[in-house]
Image 1 (tube, rainbow, N blue to C red):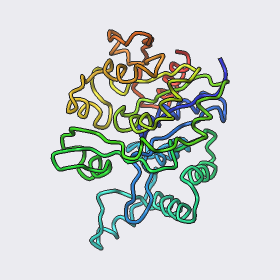
Image 2 (cartoon, rainbow, N blue to C red; image 1 turned 90 degrees about the horizontal axis):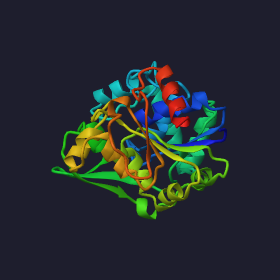
Image 3 (cartoon, rainbow, N blue to C red; image 1 turned 180 degrees about the horizontal axis):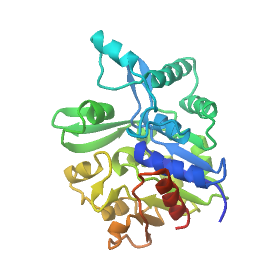
Image 4 (tube, rainbow, N blue to C red; image 1 turned 120 degrees about the horizontal axis):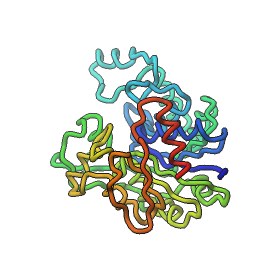
Length: 307
């Protein structure tokens, strides 16, 4: 079956599969809708971590070890900032910094986040479309013993250490989904919608909290396929398992499938979870989901598309 594909993605884990999809699909067949609940202002700059990870990954410029930022990065800015006594908890490499400065300038001049992202996509020569979930601000916040924390404060500055009792997607209920994202999801020629193996609470959750986006998934005629971010009850990277436990959820792929139950047609789990159960109406497919190499990403992308 041919046709365009839409992927919903957060940062590192989702971007790996997005790259696999981009490489196995015809040029221009992939549209990626990105989480912007992580976006924040830092040092006066507009930072969009998941959008940037997708840009660098799909341009094949990402740091292969970190998964975020650019490869062959230099850190003169951060070192000088440290010497000046500035805030250094959020690392901005020199090449990465230029992107944030230019994004901030364009936004201040009246461009939308989608327009700025499209400019960067074209500059990097990326064939896939990359769309923010909304041009309106949506901010993921977490209630902890230290009070309500913005996402980057929790995730980077505090290294996910505080226990979390509640997650809030501030602004999502009234945010307008990006029209281009809704059009992509409603395309009658659409082959599939893929929910990438991003954190279901922190990366996919903000997207699903936007009413029009959630409704578009529910009404989609194309099959909706979710890929589990857990393997044998463990997250490869990030606080997914920790958060699920703290929020009283079962820490396994079946819990992730239950959370997506009303939206998905297919759930792709790792072979380690072949014995799991899925909700009625959802079909289980198993495949190796660990994406260590580029070949792994392409292999999983093919398995998802063939599911």
